[in-house]
Image 1 (spheres, rainbow, N blue to C red):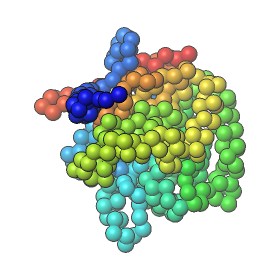
Image 2: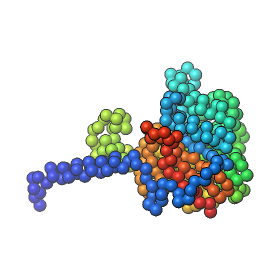
Image 3: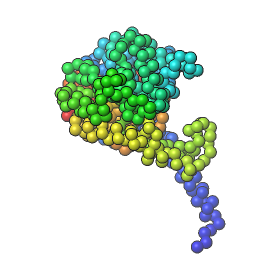
Image 4: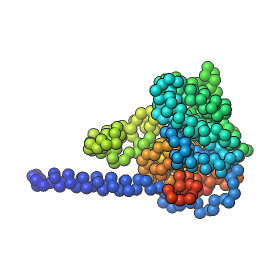
Length: 399
């Protein structure tokens, strides 16, 4: 069959038009908050007109902030800390220093690493409430084999600077779980998810002063905690999410498929429409250690979800992906709060209740055992007198 001579040019033009439309539509929708159908930004009930008994701020990936005065997240955190001086708990969900954690003294990037860390530490140095840090993959020298020495160095620096000897959890690079009881009704459980995907030395057992002696022991201890305190509301703080509509969950933009070289440099707009999909497909199907598709990450995720699905009213909070995401699934709640200093693409839809590619963080407010509210706070719109913007707020149903 002989095709008309104009067929291929016409097909090319059609593909370009379709591609441009898809790119335009994606870009137009990208920065708008997504709210699942039949879900409103605000709960139908009114937020209580009183101070919560406990307010817990969950923020991740703050390690790229260098401006202690004008950064919008620093200002927002300062406002929140001022409003919750005694009833507040602030949890940094890892990736506290980009790009590789805290190098040794004398290293060429030591000064900038300290500067980024001190922005966070100076915010909370005099704070009368509780403060906790956990580690992320970047804090372990971005997962390299000598990562343990980096995370131990960071832990020592933070605990001494703040004079809070037990604020870095789990300590010593151990896997956890570690428990802190905030009240008779609320408990925090800290787990070190980077331990499961880390190269090199991974502390375990008595020789490292870890309470966990094996991988099986970790899951048994975690399950024992969930069974032992069925009446308590639980927040599990980690770095790696269990659900994500973003990069580490295998979601990529059209631009990343067609112009893959822009990942190396933002001006490398060289179209590679087929070859460009090889890398995204690899990360979706297998991926490096920081991706959900990686076998080690996938195994951890599968076992945690299997365990959590036996229980209810768990809030699992993570960072890692640089956006805000909330999933209400199978009687539990899964947060991604990783836009403390960076933002990145997050895909709408799927199982998500709320997503937004924007700087901010989640706050959980406990008023009593049956009244718990979840809010996504973002810096206020320029030119307004608002203290912050509430991008999403809803009452969490206790089952």
